[in-house]
Image 1 (spheres, helix red, strand yellow):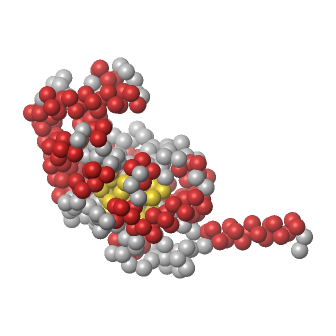
Image 2: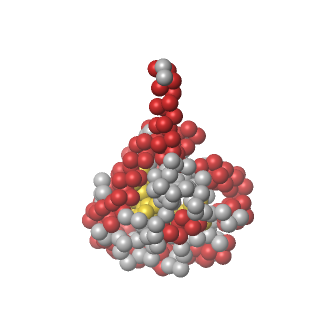
Image 3: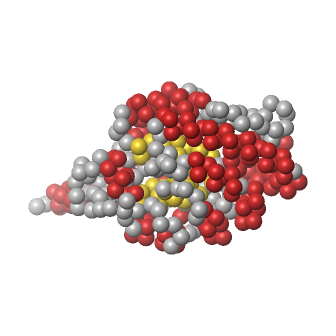
Amino acid sequence: MNRRSFLRSAAATASLALTKPVFGKSTATLTHKERVDRALAGQDLDRPPFTFYHHYKRPTPQLEAQDHLQFHRTYNTDIVKVMNDFDYPKSTTGKWYELKAVDSPFPEQLSTLKIIRDGLNGDAYFIDTIYGPYMTAMILFGAEPQFVKLGKSDETRDETISGLHDFQKANPDGWHTALEAITQSTLNHVRHIKDIGASGALVSIYNGESKFGSVTDYERYSRPYDKRVFDALADTKLTVLHLHYLERPYVDQFKGFHAPVVQYSVKTSGIPISDMRKVYSQPIAGGVDEIDYDKLTTSEIRKQWTEAREQAGSKYIAAPGCSVPDGSTPAELARFPRSLGI
């Protein structure tokens, strides 16, 4: 064998080793739903179920649904996590916090979910995306003129967070009025998505970090509302407690939440999955670096989720800590399923 043939053969062998099923069984053994069901129960499977996603920010439900379905079909995801980039309805009184509960805060999202449900035709579980009441309030507060004129930047976001914390302390009645209306609207939305057939929702808890206030502040201003949302989703199969920001002092705050899956970012929190496993017994999703995802090689992605699964045990879903960069190319996106032998 000459040198060129040898190098060609070595490259082919390396490629085969990278793409073959990591647990020794054919990846065709299980359907998407079977794989998820077995992971939720901590049973043996061919490979971990996986999901990942990014924002599309399309103007219509039809286009949003089309992009989600195409993404699922292209990358063969086991769970279809449906982004919600539609706006929560603003106050009509001129004061952001004077809100009333509405029956359907996201009618366009409900249309998106129906199209995705029909397009999947039972192929995989799909879940909605719900912002926790604090995050919705922060978005509404951040739309106030004094913040809009500052433009979008990290400094503006930090100023918004600080201003919202000041508002909570100075006007607790206004804060609780807003959170009550947002929470009730969210519960109404939960009822609708369950009627559509969603298997739950990824509920994003945004303020599990000291820059939003102390642990006591979270308990006083946010936790009761967050818990009501998870209580409403308690009968779902795949609701995800998504801890968008997380610091160690806040970890215990969510133990009483009814969430079949916990997801958080190892990258931004610095908390190993082995430490989270000591607190949470349910399946953990995460382990893959969402911040620098587009820079990772297939081997690096495989190493990250393999280490995460070793720490989490059999109740594990391979996923990034949050959405991957919206500008990720098809080649970059394809590295994740390839790392699983897909």
